Image 1 (cartoon, rainbow, N blue to C red):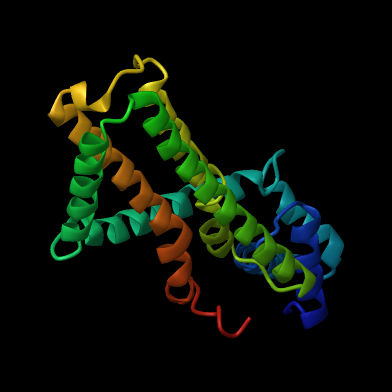
Image 2: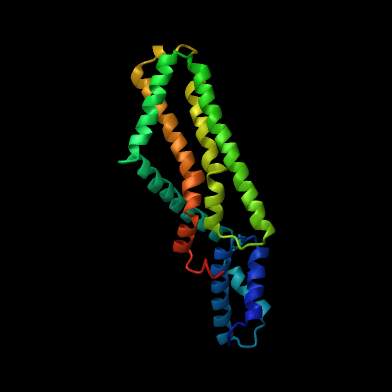
Length: 236
């Protein structure tokens, strides 16, 4: 005895009711539940669909699908970090590293020539990062609302790509940079050790590159990553 298309749709509804929002994970769970129900029917052909479903669901324990969702999130988070590193490496190796080093050198010499005080300059650097973060977060929010209004299927990796750089994945960057200078006396930057000043400039450029990667580069290649992860992405 096989599960009907109508019962398959009920399984999708069941997973959504139990807080599984993403289509890819819903499909995986539906396949698992359907297989378990069909195996039950081989031994108990008179067992109702609803009873077989509840028995199958109990196998997931008291937390239901929560642990499965968390495991998938952890696995995809690791994959997402690999995406970041792959793109960042392009900017840290030839020929693109020349651009990063040139910007670092230009920033270093500009600060020395202008003989600016440390706190205002570092504050402006941090503010620029925060402003960029806010702009990218608003762009992602508008895109998400559009997808929700169009009632498109959501994929866990897609949501991670669209949101990671604009929420948890990016928000720490400006504030880590702010921590560098909150304990620094407000003196002229030209009085600093030149190696330390160069390091500060490079860290700022590196943070800008990371923000650019997670808010521009990775979303730009999202379709490629999604097709690699989900063969059914174009069909769904």
